Every structure is written in C-alpha cells, then in structure tokens.
Amino acid sequence: MKILVTGGCGYIGSHTCVELLDNGYEVVIVDNLSNSKREVVDKIKEITNKDLTFYEGDVRNQELMEDIFERENIDAVIHFAGYKAVGESVQLPLKYYRNNLDSTLTLCEVMSKYNVKKLVFSSSATVYGSPKSLPIKEDFPLSTTNPYGSTKLMIENILKDLVIADNSWSIAVLRYFNPIGAHSSGLIGEDPNDIPNNLMPYIVKVATNELECLSVFGNDYDTKDGTGVRDYIHVVDLSRGHLKALEVINKTIGIDYYNLGTGKGYSVLEIVNTFSKVNNVKVNYKIVGRRPGDIASCYADPSYAKEKLGWVAEKDIVDMCRDAYNFVIKNKTK
Ligand code: NAD
Ligand code: UFG
Image (tube, rainbow, N blue to C red):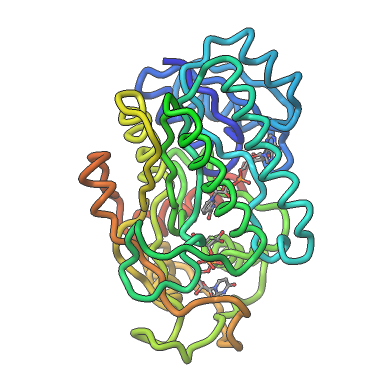
C-alpha cells in the first residue's frame, strides 16, 4: 500500500513514516518545511534503510496535490500537516484557521477527485476542553478553549459531514494526548526552533543548559502534588497507532474516533524527577503561577482503541524521558 503522509517531516509524521516503511508500506511525503527540516527525509531513510518520495510543498496548493495524486498511486492518506502552537493560535488565529482548515479542505477535495477515500486525521485531546470527569472517553462532550483547538474540532465536523454526504469514505480521527520522546536511534525527535511551549522540550533545554530554569505552572491544582497531570505517550507508540488505524479503515467505511493515550497521568514534578533520575542530570525549576487556559488533569481512557484497533501503548515514562534526552544529546554533539 502506498500512503501519502502530509506533514511527514514533522515530529509525529517522521516517526510514523519510519513505522510505515518498517512495516512494508510505500511512503510519499508532502511537507512545506514550515516547521521541519529537509534532512529529516534522509534520517528516515537512514533508520529504515528504505526509500521514500518527498514533495516539498504546501497541502493548500491544489495544483501540487493533484500532481501528486496523478503521479503516485496513493491508497490512503495520513494528514499531519498543520500548525499546532496553542499560544500562537491565540495571537494569530487567522494563520491557524487558514492553514489547518484550508489544507484539510484542499486535501479532501483532491482525494475525492482521485477517488482515494481513506484518511487518518491527527486530532487532539484538546477537543475535550475541560473534561467533566476522568479518564476521558471518546463520547465525552466536545468544546475548545483556543483557536488551535477550534481548528481541530471544526475539521472533525467537516470530516463527519463528508462521510454523511458520501458513505464510501473511511476515516479514523485520532485524538492524541501528550506525545513526547523520540526514536531510539536518536536520529529523529522533537526539535523546536523557538523557546518551547511544551513541557518535555523545555525540560530537555534546561537539562542541556540552553535554558536556565523550568517554570512549573502552578502547584495548587487538585492533583497528587498540586502540579498539572497529563497523559504522556511515547511518539513511537503513537505512530504505531496510525498503522493500526490504517488497517481498520482499509476494511471498513464511515468515521470513528480514537483516544491515543496510555491511560496514565503523570504530574509535572513526576516528569521532572523521572527525567533527572533516568538521565542523571539536574533540571532546575521554580514554581510560578498557573498558565492561563491550563486544566488540572487530562488523561485518556484508551480502551476503545484497544478494542477496535488492537492498539495499546507499550513504552513507559522511563523510555520517554530517556529517548527525549538521547535525541538531543546525539544531535548536540554532531
Ligand atoms: P509538527 O509541526 O512537528 O509537524 C507538522 C508538519 O506539517 C511540519 O513538518 C510542517 O512543516 C508541516 N506543515 C504545516 N503546514 C503545512 C502545509 N500547509 N503544507 C505542508 N506541510 C505543512 O507537528 P507534530 O507534533 O508532528 O503534529 C502533527 C499533527 O498532530 C498536527 O496536526 C498537530 O496539530 C497534531 N497534534 C500534535 C500534538 C503534539 O503535542 N505534538 C498533539 C495533538 C495533535
Ligand atoms: N508545563 C509547565 N511548564 C512549562 C510547560 C508546561 O509547568 O514550561 C505544564 C503545563 O502547565 C501542563 C503540563 O506541563 O500541566 C503539560 O503542558 P504541555 O504544554 O506540554 O501540554 P498541554 O497538555 O498543555 O498541551 C498539549 C499540546 C496541545 C494539545 C494538548 C492535548 O500542546 O496541542 O496537549 O493533547 F492540544
């Protein structure tokens, strides 16, 4: 099977391309490199010892997308391409609505035209807003608290309407919890250019002395130690979930939604302490006020993904902390 991976040079996309190639799929990437580097393509080839096809360009470019579908015999699409920074989406909402919505609309139009109607879409646990209880199940009410989250929820609705209008589509909407970690080779991982917003990339930069001190956003939440609790999932486990989703959409029609998380919640301080211990490195931190918009706790009930996709996360928090640091150490010394 030949899979088109939009945003395949990015953090989750690159790991998914590795899993696809390792499992006998052919891979075509389209990425405009707005948040990634071209060298990732070579790293994917190096890890897998397999070839792939790369198109540098924008998913919103209909002509380019038609050209790709014309040349390649695409069987299914995994759609990662989009912007993902929550804070920036509040400052620049139009940038987020324009890119995330337009890329999906163009992609689906071109897929329709070429009669390729199998799609895996990257959604997010952010569509659950402030959950009424924990763990979070797929049928919980949906709401959003920022423009980024709204783009994900709007796209989920667009895809639902598409399936209602044409029941030959088969779509898996994957709601990711908090992906961290990196491939064990240390060749690919999360590599933000700017000061990171997310916890793990920030911890890594403090550990490598690129940043001075982690600000822990609040220790007065109603959680085990007062700091925020999240469901961290190893990016390789997450990527494998996409292959399971592909297998299912290949045999079914309609749209379905899956939480991809571990079901376990860890606090900020648990992550900091585990990271320090596993990697034998100090992480300076200070407690500061809450970050606006944050919720106390968020973790998945992943049982539906287990039942329907036959997928469970296998890696633990030690693997996640070790692999995240390994990637940065390897790439610093190069
Ligand atoms: P990323 O930024 O590392 O990867 C996205 C890739 O898409 C980048 O390589 C970027 O260059 C590319 N891209 C963006 N807009 C494009 C366009 N119009 N045309 C072509 N390429 C384009 O992000 P990621 O962490 O790998 O996330 C992948 C997807 O998963 C995103 O849709 C994101 O919203 C979603 N997601 C991520 C997280 C997370 O914490 N990382 C959580 C939930 C959902
Ligand atoms: N945190 C800190 N200090 C930091 C960064 C984060 O204390 O410098 C804390 C946060 O307050 C939170 C936890 O670490 O309690 C995790 O924060 P992240 O920013 O890493 O992740 P979020 O859960 O806030 O958001 C992430 C993605 C969103 C996605 C959401 C749900 O960034 O895109 O998970 O999937 F929508």
